[in-house]
Image 1 (spheres, rainbow, N blue to C red):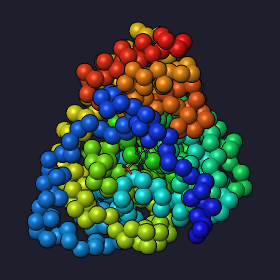
Image 2 (image 1 turned 180 degrees about the horizontal axis):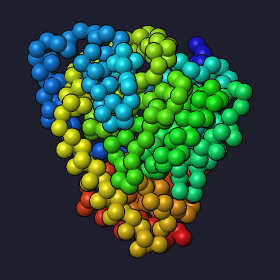
Image 3 (image 1 turned 30 degrees about the vertical axis):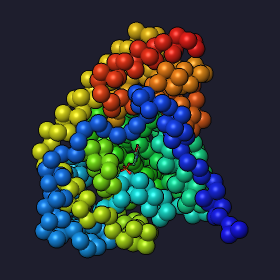
Image 4 (image 1 turned 90 degrees about the horizontal axis):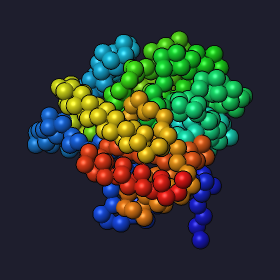
Length: 373
Ligand code: PLP
């Protein structure tokens, strides 16, 4: 039998899928990581217009169409004061591809990549696929990533560390002081800070900061995506930016693996970036309301939960058997350990779901908690 690569044998399908498959058809799903809003009308329209005008039939340049990269550069200039040259942006097939090409371009065989634990499942898997070794770092009690823990984990083999604020699966948002520290650590140790900012617009308390704002060398690469910013998960359009040299290396991977991001999606994302931000505010307000409903329900049920300050996830502390009890009662939640050993003893709840369903699910979770505590 033709053999498989050692690298691919080190990764398996994410544990989240298994939970979905174990649930009944009518189950309330608090496992899905996507906003429950439609893509903004102006973004859809731009894609349709581009298709009808015959502008989306052919490959675009490897890095993507110029107007999209200009819109991305303007966005980051306006939101974060970053002086970003559109030439230093690559449009990708979602934030997922952006993470993939960033790690492929920076990780050699045996290199270590420091990742938050619990953390988004792709960091571990994509590090392994790049031939590297993930080094999980435990989070603080409040589920934020501690810069001191990252710095202590750096060795001569460290190629990169990943930061993700607002975070999946935690909903935690890093403070300005911590983000400044991430930039300093990357600069001083000559390791890459890979900053995953795909939930940038979903912050309830405090503000979003990027290590790119504070770094003094080219030690930071940022990943972002239209998926969660504009509720466009199906379009598969993200981007990555960094110094000219880093973009040059990442585009080598992107060119051969992908050629270019989908042309219609590029037009849609450009329109989303340039369009009215009321829809974004509406989404954030709605997630914040639902977060508050969830936290109130947990408090009433005696379930302890660090207060998520962004994204649309919460990670309550739960006893063994809680996830299964919820599944038996037709509510899908994801076991924390699906995101790394550090997630054990927690469940991840995505509250990007209909408010009525959420209220029903809260009462089910309270019963499930009562049954296993
Ligand atoms: N980064 C984080 C933290 C995520 O949660 C996700 C998706 O869930 C992604 C990146 C990738 O998103 P996409 O490929 O849809 O842009």
